[in-house]
Each structure stands twice: as structure tokens, then as C-alpha cells.
Length: 286
Image (cartoon, rainbow, N blue to C red; front, side, top):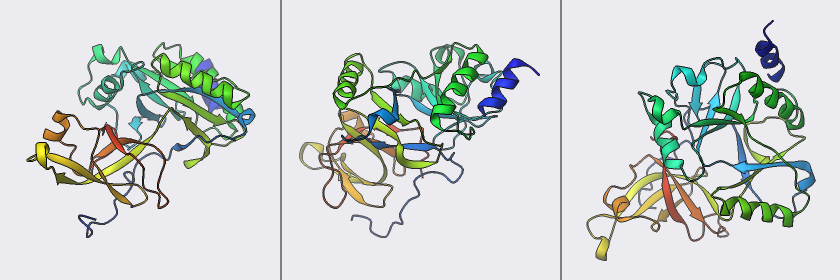
């Protein structure tokens, strides 16, 4: 049997009548999702890696898809020779280049020039039945067997203390990175949000779906004043800051997903000091 095949087998309030919207499309891949870091976690149990600011990519063994389940129309050469083994990762164009990565990943007619700047940063093997400690060497061997410079295994390391973690976080952010990820070594790959995967950032952010456009007043009269958005929990709130003039003139469509930044939550679970960051075009609009 070919060496690559052997390794692949081993790796194996405004509109109250609106219904609550589903979080993702029905055919979206069942992915491992991250919780937010909190001090006191047993860091000795976790691997640490950079959090890449790109588009989540899931290779199901035959097709490359986004977190929302949409097919990524990558050039044939980009996925040529990939194994019939699921790979979870990030389509990444480099630090500070999220917009480029999102634009390229959404192209229906892929162009080589844009894709030559993209990398698939592989961080897990969903089909592997072992713990992350066991999946990691299988992942590294699988990526090495491909021999493609645009497919890379995400480097993993250990840190012993919260102080060391925060120092690494600030070095990463100063260098243009988005943050860090913690992956529990003893964990199996399980879909959904849990402490098996933790994101560490200098701020908190997450996604919500746009329910309605609320009209502006004063200098914003005649254009967007705020978005009414709905969290996956079904809770709704007004998102009114963080928009450029261009955003207010051409607001995110109703049904689309947006990323917002916030600082903690109120007792009822709504975000405090929420501010718009960007539209998530890799998540399906409704």
C-alpha cells in the first residue's frame, strides 16, 4: 500500500413575532467549538497554539466546506492528493488578512493568484478515535506525507502557568496574531462547545444573526442606527456601535451573521459594551 494511504488510514423586542433562528444550516459539519478562557484552568492538561484569523475549513475526505456547510470552490490543485480522512483546520492568508481569506474562500470561480496566498492550517482529525494527545502525532504524520507547502500542521506547545500563557498571548498579539487556542490533551473529538477547546484573546468576541435594521437618528438619520441581532441562545439585543459610515449606508443584510466584540455579560447573559466587528460571510444567511 502507498505510504500516504497507510498514514491516512492511521490518522483516521422589535420584531417579537419572528421565530428563533437556527444557529447553522442543517448540513453544516459537526465541529468542535471553543469556550472562552478563564483563569484557574489546569494548563498542564492543554496544548497551546496560535488562533488563526481565517475561515474555518473542514475537509470531509472528499469536499472542502466552511463551518456553515458551504462548499469551498478551491482550485483542483489545492486539494489534489488529500486523503479520505477528515481534517479540521483554518483557511488562512496570514496575520491581519482575514478579509482576503474570506473573499478567496467565497469565490465561486477560484483564481490561482489568490489561492497561492492561502494555507490550510490543520489542527485536528475529527475521524480519529483517540485523544488529542494521540491525534496530534497522527495529524503531523499525515500532513508531512502530503508534502504540500500550503497544507501545514498547526504548531502546538505547552505552557505551565497563567503568567506564561498571558506573556505568550501578548507576544502573539503584538506580532499581529489574533490570540491563542488551548486544546485538552485527554479529550476526544466531540462536536459542540466545551472546555476541550478554549480560545484565549485580549477581548471576547462571538457571532449573532441580524434580525432587523433599526433606523438612525441625528447625524445617522436616513441610514442604519443599530442592528437588532439574535444570539444562538435566542436572546436579542441592539448592536449600535463599531460601524463605519460605509457600514451604516450599506448595513449587513437581514439574516446574515456578524461578529461583535464585548466585555463580559450582564446577569441575564446579554453582552456588555458590544461593538460590531465584521460580517461573517462564511456562515449561511437566512
